[in-house]
Length: 89
Image: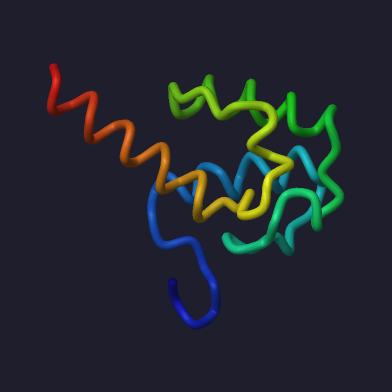
């Protein structure tokens, strides 16, 4: 993570874009937790759909309400999944 907490990967940047639109905030950082930003069940569903469309990855709905529900952690899971799928192709 950089000292100013800027997105450092392409996946983090995509997730930042989604969260900023859905949560209507331009001040979201990659280590902010979804619930702490005011995320609720409707915004979680919107994020699930947008992440699936943009990243071809299905984040579990309940994942948004667990400890560690951050852009950084979701990006790691998405990027790990993409590595595995490329290796098995």
